[in-house]
Length: 189
Image (cartoon, rainbow, N blue to C red; front, side):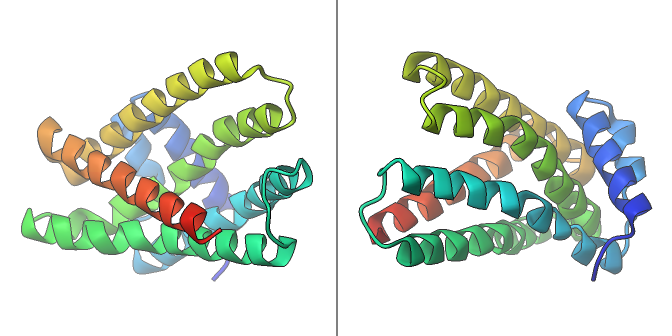
C-alpha cells in the first residue's frame, strides 16, 4: 500500500520535528492501521541507497563470496530488521499497558529511519570508498550513533508516554537486536 506523496512529506516533516526534539512532531503522523502499514514504505525509500552501499562494499573486495549470496543474505537481513523490532516492541509495550500507543510509535519510528539513513548512508559510502579516514569516520560514526540513540529515545519516550528509563530500555533492546541481526548476517557470510 503506497503512501500518498503528501502523507510521506508530512511524515518526514514530523520525523524532522522529532529530530529537533519537538514533541509536536507526532501530530504529523496519522494514527491509523493504514498509515502504520504505509510507514514501512520508509524501507523502500532507503533500500536503493542501502543496496548501493552493499555493492560498494562488494566492489572493493570486502566480501569474499558471490555477489548473489552476499546480496541475498543482506537483503533478507534488511527485511528481518524492519519486521523484528515492531514484533518485539509490541510484546514489550503490551506488558507496559501502552498498546494503544503502538501504531503511532511504530509509524514515527519507521519514518525516523529515513532521516537517520540520510545521515548514515552517505557517511558509510564515503568511508567504504576511502574518502574518510578510518579514524575520522569512527569518530563521526560514534557521534551519529549517539544522536540516533537519543533521537530514538525521544521518539520512544514521547510516543509511548513512558518514563525515561523505560524508553532507554526499549532503545537498548532495539540496538541489541540490530547488533544481533548484523552479527548473524556476518556470520553467515
